Length: 267
Image 1 (cartoon, one colour):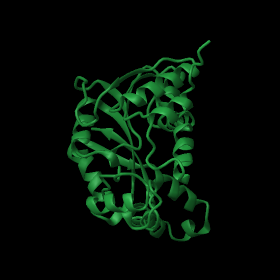
Image 2: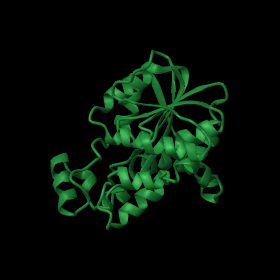
Image 3: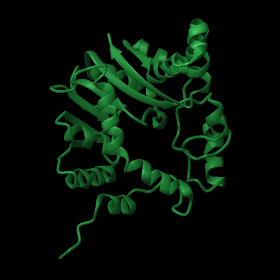
Image 4: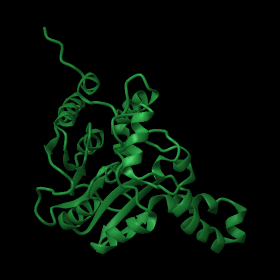
């Protein structure tokens, strides 16, 4: 009887990792990928604080190996997912089968999506915008296909964070987030992390906010609320609430936080 390969076996066979297999990032990439269902469940629990998901239509852009989409489908939430790479859809379909669900997935690009206007209630852009050649196109497309009062979930690294300047979260290289793309490509090759950098777009906080505001979507920082809630447990907040709020919004969020999580709402 022919052995049916598992999702992880298919991943190792089909997906070229960002770095050679001998380097420690390979194992981290594999582990992060197959924590996708757990990350998807966390996302469901988070979004429920902003919108009822039952009966809503969700789009997962650049879904990769499909963990987040699988979590949504397992929760009986109507979900469409896509990626630009056929090999990812093969892995994600197998992983979905292992979890007893089927994905409604396709090949497509986030920069030009094959959906009608106002098609979705929630759009997920997890770990995607920093890899796009034309991020403005993604933002416009998200606004076009998102319903009024719809939500968008987006994550993005903060290029100004000292943590990422010291060591970025994709290649573990110092200073690479500050380099022009051509120099970053050379750096990645010279350090045997890959053939070129896959991180193309790293905006400032203000730029990302303005990009979405231009198309009618207002972004709210998930970390900002968490940071202020942390401070509320201390005596410092009781004594200087205004100063703490100012620090959290204008220092921590813009300059220190290495990774942004935003919930956006279409006006």
